[in-house]
Amino acid sequence: MKFGFSLLAALTLVFSLNIFAADAKAKKLVIIGDSITEGYGVRREFAYPNLVQQKIDKAKKNWRVINSGISGSTSASASSRVTWHLKQKPDLMILALGANDGLRGSDVKAMEANLNAGVELGKKAGVKIVLAGIRVPPNYGAAYATAFDAVFKKVADKNGVPLIPFLLDKVGGDKSLNLEDGIHPNEKGHAIIAETVYKAIEKLL
Image (cartoon, rainbow, N blue to C red; front, side):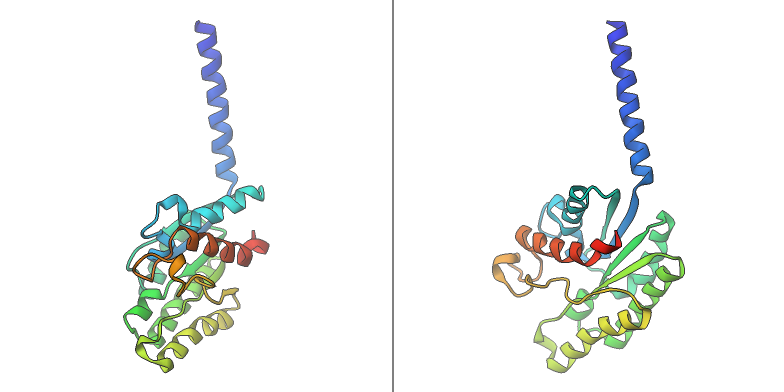
């Protein structure tokens, strides 16, 4: 009995140490976003960051995805959140902010400055950055929607970073892929977003 227990304990310890070692060697992908990234309205395991993790695992790549989605956050939080996550020494960051700026009709120049600052901080630290674009409904008029959409390409071009043109591509506006609020994706929507994101970052992993 004692021998069996000791052997089991030893095997468990070895297994745990192997898991710890593998996790320690894993590269880190941080996704900084808002309620869409957080997975508002769906179980966290069905939020797109977790689905991206599943795709990475299936491809046998040693990466750990960190979901840094915070409901209600705007581009104003970009710098402080990038600074915070740099402490984790990430290898890759996706900056997916701006949806709440658009819903509030925020100044697009301010959003551009906020996103630029966040991207520049990451680049200065030697972290690969991917910017995720978002679009707004025409509530504030076509001129605002056009100017808003253009910000993401401007920031990506200025900093020389990859751009996901529209995070909600094939999801936004489709009732069958969103919750009743028409804003947040449901589980099916998150699956499509995960595919969009994974395709955009696959070569960077």
